[in-house]
Length: 143
Image 1: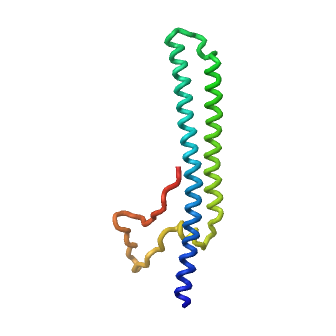
Image 2: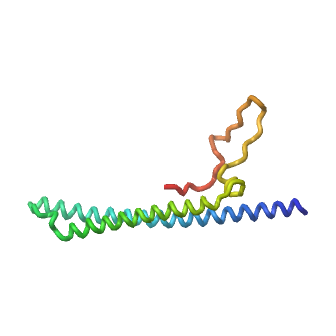
Image 3: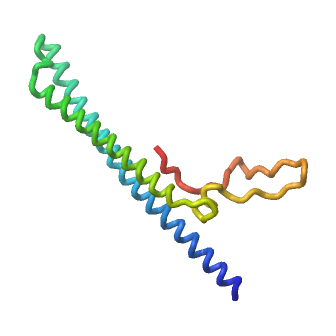
């Protein structure tokens, strides 16, 4: 029964790895979505700022930059830029947290290294995966 027990243990370990990777991907994706939404809000505010400046310049207002709405929009864009930078730091922190859990020799490290190398005859090259496929099916969660 030790063979079946080994299979069960291996399967449980791989399920734990999959759960950890899923949790990491979910957290990173959530922060990336928030970052995207902040970027869209920055675009809206910049468009509004541009419309105010354009309208002021086309009507001949020389004091368009002294408009209080311009100062409000510039401050709002600055705050949104800081929020977006915080989201980027959160993403980096999540990735670092999960990378810290990976120990050499454990399943995390084995999963990061990809499939094991195939033995070849001396003087021959290792066979290439069909179609240039690396065999890595993990989703890309990088920026």
